[in-house]
Image (cartoon, rainbow, N blue to C red; front, side, top):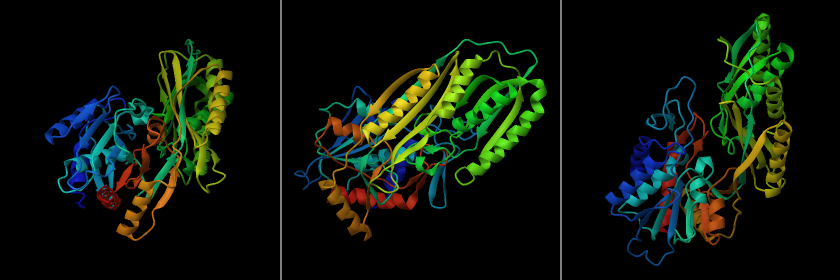
Length: 476
């Protein structure tokens, strides 16, 4: 069965089911019903993951069982001017130049590709395969919660194929670990000075992207850029800050951010002038990575209150000071990012400002170094700092039997060598390796560009090659 018809059928089906991270119940219920309708056994664990099993086809009973795995949730990003409720609305998509794009939102090919693929294999009647366990995990994008909740006795298979990689022709055999940080400022509002006028400062139309896979592209971080501008306004315009908002999740590069500020009313003309100067500066700095970069100033009504000056100054200075983006490249693998950090979001609510970070590294020691830097800066700034969601990397095994089999199948199908690599992103394989240390694991997938952003797209031709390879591995 080399046709991708079944894949696209199920991909379309799951695009109609809301599945943002933290809201996976609808897709899990759908998969449970799918299993029943196909007379397959399924089990939902305490973490919310579902495992659907399928017996080996005739003649394949003696082969080692294979686990197919992917996550059901997706990053919910919305383009400016788009109205979409990820908890209720379907993902609308269209084809352009051989690629599938969503309309104003993330597509969810990360990791809808895995969900659709597993459903297609489970529903098939003409693919030969050993005994299968299809593991659909929840909430990967907000801390790999489903993977962390997996029981060590949940699965019997010996080989795991993770279907969450995003470059066709690349076989992933290792990944970095990561840690999340939450920095919190609590304050009491102060009144707006008499004679001040209020403005909304916005940084928008940035590309954003995946904080691991796209971090080497040196794209602008909207929160960092906004903070550089705010620092000038505080220094030169006596600006006061009422609130700062930006980004959505810590594993996506924020593509927009905004702040509500006040300044003495007589400074309005100069404010617009300096905003234009910064637009030119940022436009020049990010001409290649973010050609549509936009900094805007909008006159608004006065806010109810302001951050104390020392709090706003501490927040702005801390954001300006933190390491963000690529921190270090691998000294042994040319062009491979070893360590990075990403300030993914900042939100103001109920007299609290919270910033969320994600930092990654293939070396635990370097991950600890960045962790210490962020902690030191924000403790000095008066914030409370909490670390969570730590997971280890997945160490490559170049003698892996499933790797050898997959390389052989790839060469036979396409008459070329696949690339074998490690990835600067978190894969659930890193967590699985600590729960099931004897598993033989490999990750691969079709080409997905700009995951975690509204520019996310899925290459149609690569889906066909990916599907052929998956079937060949199962039938080998």
